[in-house]
Length: 486
Ligand code: ADP
Image (cartoon, rainbow, N blue to C red; front, side):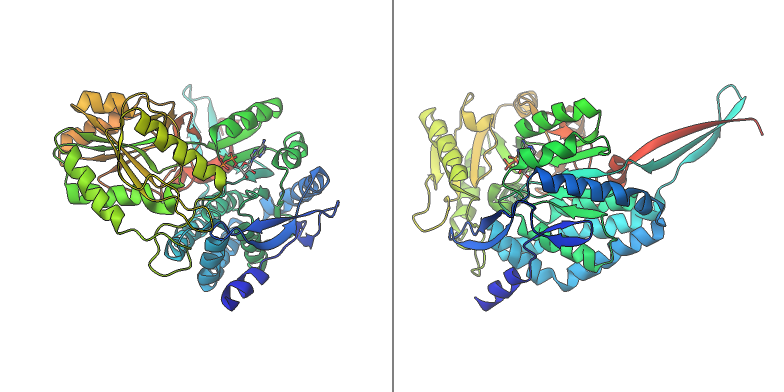
């Protein structure tokens, strides 16, 4: 449509380095496609190591000036960015649907969620404080203050193109750090539009730089090896995170890692099943199942498993599959062919090991990469779907016998991002807060993400927290000073 064309035409197609939109030095470009149709949306600059070196120079040159900029000024720029995003909300939503596939209504929700990081950290910029105290011996005075870490490299994934960018850029800028952001090659357009918005909001030259590239490793190498880089913040898969942590170790970089998940969704026999079913639909089918927080394993008490399965299946039957721009659609395409193959292989493995398909279980026969929303019940121990991230619209149900069994199954994973617990028993809920080995928990709710709360995982789900009071400290270094008695 003409609306789609104008939204895409407004997106810059170049790299943003040192305050200027520029082609890559080598001149290469690559295509960004719509997963609902497979068609090319736009061709953009393909950065190489040469461009990365220039971006590093720009971020390093701008660091001192940005750190010295008054916190109020840094905050006001972020607040202006938040306001501009509200004006451009519909364009951003449509752009995300076009490059990533999520339904427009969900994309609109991501604009709200992602925008909140700009607003939250605009407020946090002026609340960076320290302390003054007497040392234990009474012989001196201690001062503790927080200073910007320095130039930061931000690597983001394709599944939440706007929120993953603002969740890193906003706290970095609020703290006084300059950044180089490298969005995922599958969905780079939203980040390009966001960087343009930040430019319009008055971010000084060099403070935000963006590299789009098909060679994520090659473009990252000169940055990670540069002594001027002080921080790496990554959201993506655990294997890539592990490899980046090893590279970061060579330079002893500060790191924040938001990695994979394998969220358990526990439904106890005393749960409010209406709430549990609503929560399940959100925790599973939001973003077409492509979220690290997506419920991966539904663990349901044996006495309510059949009813729960029947009720979610009835709800899944109502989901409309289609291009995210069509009205009434709640299940868009998966991001690519590999995602379809992975979901399908996990379903077939579960069925081979005894699971039953209540609905779905197949690719949708139409152009684009669509997988039918699926419910599996009777998924047995040892099935791959219990240990791997599905990242698709497949709801896998297994049973447990009692609370100890539920906790043991829930914690039987190397991941520890989030867990969902549905129970009416307050004491049980409190016990689960302590026994679930996760960084986050939804207690009778199916979505936990919120700009005002610390998002992050334990075990192989990552290091550090984004959002909340904690988020800005990922970009601050603690500095301690001792002075003698006055
Ligand atoms: P996903 O499975 O969600 O695509 P990835 O971990 O593959 O997650 O990708 C997340 C981000 O990490 C993307 O921006 C991608 O380009 C980037 N990336 C992937 N491999 C590397 C690498 N070796 N070095 C630096 N960045 C990488």
